[in-house]
Image (cartoon, rainbow, N blue to C red; front, side):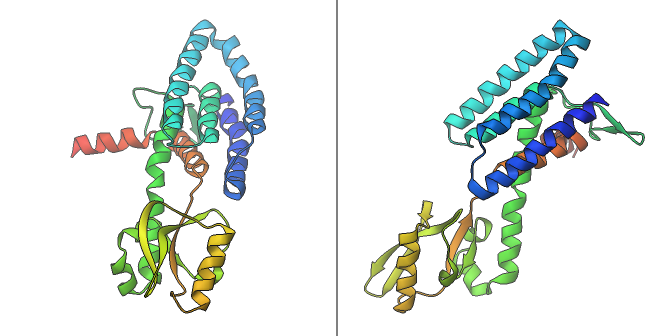
Amino acid sequence: MMEILKVLACMPFLLYACYSDIKTRRVVNEVWVVMFGVGYVFILYDLMRLGLPYLVRNVLTFIFIFIFVYILFQLGAFGGADAKVLMVISLIVPTFPAIMIYGTQLPINGVPPLGLFAFSVFGNSVILTIVVPIGLFLYNLLRNPLKENLKRPFYMLIGYRSPVSKLEKGHIRMIDSYSETEDGISFGFTRTGTELTSNVIAELKGYLRDGRMNDSVWVTPGLPFMIPITAGFITAVVFGDLIFYLTMQFMMM
């Protein structure tokens, strides 16, 4: 029962973090402070029930996750909120929760050898992020003319075409950079993309009015990583560790 309550206690904070990340691309630190405050009840309960071995395991788990996410944060792999949520999860749910629902033991795929729940949440989130390029590819395949897709086949995995006339400042970037030429506006791929500031949007719309470019550019959405983390959390609880499962399937082939 307590394991289910741990999961249920974490879910409102994860869902709110997803909402905040989508709207503003940031999650205030107070969310994690309150989440830890709620989780502290479970930490204290487990400490009283399991004693010193639980405390040692919890501290070691937190240290491992802290070092892991700190390195990824310094490398720019994800943001501060993503790192903090994994650290808080590692304290509240240090190991896989053993949950029995209607005779079914969760996680369905069992517990991986390492058994660090937060680490599996991260691994699951990385695997689940792959769904986004697949979805974008299918969207572009069905929506765009074949000729347009063949011009930029790689773009089909990372973005979609948007009318210049409907561009608005938000959490998307143009995949290409652009420059003026004698024949019009030239577009070319750039690794960092082009931020769609008010000035850039106004300039592109001006080029469109002057007939110097077509009413369509490739843009890429900035997917908040908090969404895959939340999906990875749910997947870890219900199914288990996706990387461990895929590795075992590969070895059995």
